[in-house]
Amino acid sequence: MLNPHDLTNILVAHFGGLDATQWRQLGAYERTAFIASHPAAAAKAFDVLIRGFIDIVVKYNNGCGLFGKCSGYYGTVEAQGRGTLHCHMLLWIEGHPNPECLQSMMMEDDNFESLLFQWLEDVIHCELLGTSVESVGAIDVSPSRPARPEGVPDPHLQLPPQIDEVGEGAFEEAFYDFVGWLAVECNWHEHTLMCFKNLRPGEEPWDENCRMRIDGSIHMASYLDPEMQSILLQRHHPWVNNYNDIVMFLLQCNMDIKFIGSGAAAKALTYYISDYITKNDLQVHVGLQAIRAAIDSHRKHFIDDVEASSSVREQNLLTKAVNAMMGRREVSHQQVMSYLIGGGDYYTSHEF
Image (cartoon, rainbow, N blue to C red; front, side):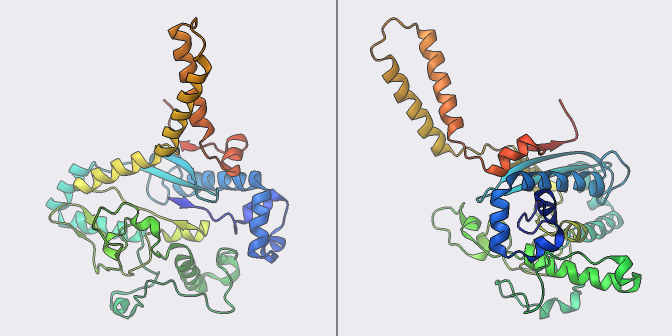
């Protein structure tokens, strides 16, 4: 999942007619007002960013990318509460075995399992960069995100360290520091009501019931769950959500990354993600209200008309129902502009 931060995205300023200096001088409220009045710039910036991720980072059909050789992708665009856009994307990596085969390979070959864990731990981070096993016990386990120190600028707005400016010797440390600030700002998980919206009767809104599965626990090493045969990655920080350091550095925004690996959990995750990225935005209760309104309108229209045929009545009811439901679907300005000048509501490598 990629969640570009439009309120600090320099591309929004570019497409909205501001230079980088002007953009960074604006206050938070001024940038919010600018975004609200320039939805086309925000939608265009989002599209350029997602396409750049596909072309430069993933490198579909263009050799080996950050995650390997990508043989296919599908991403769906969604709007959040205030109308900003984000993308949920599935990547297919060439040579990746299916869940059953991967499970067998890991159980039969310890060396393969070790190499797979090394690759996953390099691609997916659940800690601040540079965290060692020895330092895990010293990490502050407070669930509240630490406040940014006074005088430290917002990393969303800053130009990332450039190797030709800081030099090769100092770049690694600058990279670690910058990504660390971003991980705290963007990927530090704090529970909200959304974390507990699927609680069953009797369940309490406690850490272990968070639907994001961030419960404040840590795992010192990656391992294959003997019961579910699913991969559980090391987690050296209790509250930092999964991220990739290169993507975080380049996009400077909130993200989530998961590996669809082995066992029953992989199948469940595949179903969940596939179902999620194809879900309908129209909520059930809103759709039912729309259908009821359409039926009431249909009855009033034909209450004194005894000559209309059943086919005419049925066609009228269907038209009213569809129009009523579509009329109640909430679409933000950025969503509208994404259809007009952006990439629409999905990105895909294949057409059928």
